Image 1 (cartoon, rainbow over the protein chains, first blue to last red):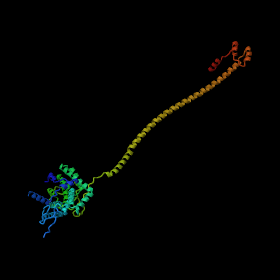
Image 2 (image 1 turned 30 degrees about the vertical axis):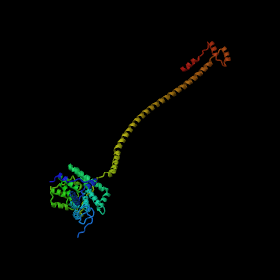
Image 3 (image 1 turned 30 degrees about the horizontal axis):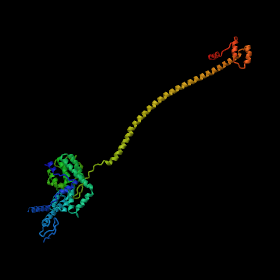
Image 4 (image 1 turned 90 degrees about the horizontal axis):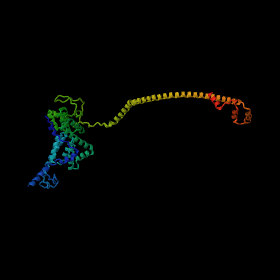
Length: 47
Length: 409
């Protein structure tokens, strides 16, 4: 049975054009290389 | 024997002989593996995009970017897919990032230029987002009619807006309009063959896997028309599709989508001149046939009354004039009579004067007086006294008596 409220929660508002800048900055720009680098730095810091 | 890179794949700094970067310290073999995996997922995403499995393509491309955020091909394709699904801002953000990573020989720059050169497209995208968000709010408040109106406008603005169709189908399901919901979901599957939400909703509505695959493969998917959004609900048995219209055979090219005409607010402005002219003509006709005759009648009535009063006055004046004329005639008659009388009386007076003269001449004179009289006859007036003194024998008539006699006559 479809629960209207629950299904409705899955919908996210569409971004408007003036929110483009915010969308770019909030985008997670980390890839695996950044994560490994971070881990390496953390390890070096610990050591 | 493997060729050792001289510069780091990540930061571009020189690489040591052991394969580690002198700056970031990352192992080049590791970076190579990551980048290969990124390309692998990109290829999968590309294949999925080619067969319109857009949801699957998005997942694959996102995975590709997790391994290499600088994979401009994956980012460009992801932006393209978002653009196809109607999420223009998401598309723009990915293209901007892609252009930032690689400014030369990047197709994302061409996409951005195209959008920048067409401000209407940006405006439409903005409006679409606003209307969809408004529809979402209405749906949360359970104002279904208002949500329908907003969604109708949204989908006429962009017939590929998948989220709009999904929300529409959800509203239709909530209101028990399963036929319309199925139609909207079929449209979603024609754009994105493996859209998770669409498949989930269809399954909840009781569609089988085979049924879903049939819907997905439907080439002659009917466009979702205006009348489907509300109003006419085709009477159909529960679980069965409503009867289709009998249409001629329509051939579609592979992977083309049916287009919905752009929603246009019927502009009354272009007919305003005609409406004005028609209104003027009607006004003139009303004036001519209704207002003018009444006015004319009133004026003619006034004229008649005026004429009557003037003729009455005229006749009374004429009567007075005729009376006066009669009076004048009468008076003229009297005047002539009096003139005659006067002339008669004058004649009488003259005759009497003659008589007097003759009588006076017959008065005998005394001897003394006669001699003196003869001497004085030349001009004396005192003779009468001497005559009177002696004239006991002569009867003299005084002048006054004479005059009285004449008047009595």
